[in-house]
Image (cartoon, rainbow, N blue to C red; front, top):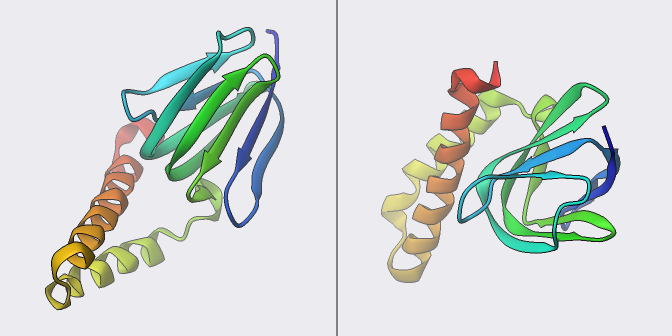
Length: 135
């Protein structure tokens, strides 16, 4: 299978950089897969799990939004947040969701809207983590 270069960058770090066989991306308009030779493409990301396939193994990475660009140089994803599933402490993640829920009553107006949106993103990820598709 032909490979292509993939970079996953977040504000904190370069989460991934290397040659891959395929990347499945959670797009705002729907999930999409990228293979070598893909047509140029730009898409907004939604909160979800990005799957990198290389050499027969898969790596799953949580992203909480950003942009993906496919070009003749490969795929570049600029993610707001990127955390490898193997590095995620699921109990701490659940506690974070509980904390976000408990603080909603303290917020108003735009601050409340942003808090609800962030909570929805976290719950979307938690739902995907609990689905059988990841096991």
